[in-house]
Image (tube, rainbow, N blue to C red; front, side, top):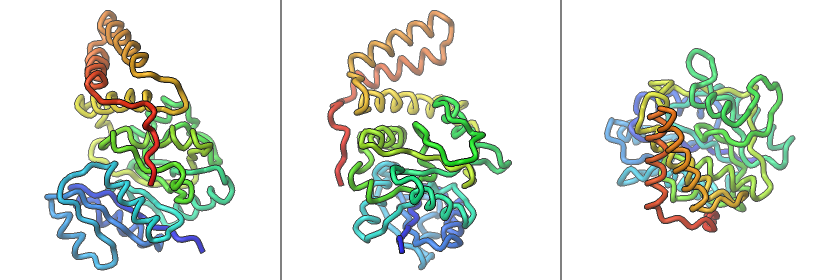
Amino acid sequence: MRKTIAAIISYNGREFLPNCIKSCQLAELEILVIDNNSKDGSLEYLCSQNHITLIKNNTNTGFTNAANQAVKYSINNDFDYLLLLNQDVEFEKEMVSLLLVDFEENPSMAVVSPMQMNEQNEAEYQFKKICTDYGTDLTQTLTTEVKFVNAACWLMDLKKVREIGLFNPIFKNYGSDFNYCHRANYYGYKIGLNPNAKMIHKKKNQKDYEQNIFKSIKSYNTYFLALILNPLQDNKPKKVIYQLAKGAIKSFMTFNFRKSILKTNALIFLIFKSINPKNFSQQI
């Protein structure tokens, strides 16, 4: 029988953790929690849960490092599938079963995500925006291949992860999932979205990325960095930087100052970032 483990990335999410862990228990999954040095009582709560495996980091190492710790633990302990979770996720028991079937029916799938919903049972804001940006049809009734879906809830086939490799540590929090999808495609694998499997993403602010300029800046920076590192395309740093500079000027000239600021900041970020476009593979 195939073994599946759930890995929760934890950082100052005390209010969310009990329900996330309960979802994993109801799905009869083994549970691993990677805590990034939480200061809100999360660590004390996690230490009281004797049915989970806890890895405690001494600093906030970010999503990417914690996700890589989860991947390494899962592979070293002979699991077949890894359910990678944000701490503010809840789901019903059948979600995992539905996602596991996708791997049986679609051997080329490396990652499958459920629909990411909010508490009003609507597509979560950031998830919907990403789907719209990448042309994903959310009215589909069957699992469909997508270009990208954010890693709030990914079921990963660890046999394929061994070939694709780890999340690239050049990304600390944002962008590592985007880069991972590129690399999965490079190795001939697909990313899937199952419209019949659902989870709830309990963000405090559903439009956080739209309203928070700092998160928008980080999102823009890592988006263009991921473009440069995409092994499927010849996006040389100078080419992307030129396109960014051109876009920033155009946005300024059309009085779209917010986009001009985001693109200018991304331009500066890339100029000072040490980038090796060939270094896209992070082997385990």
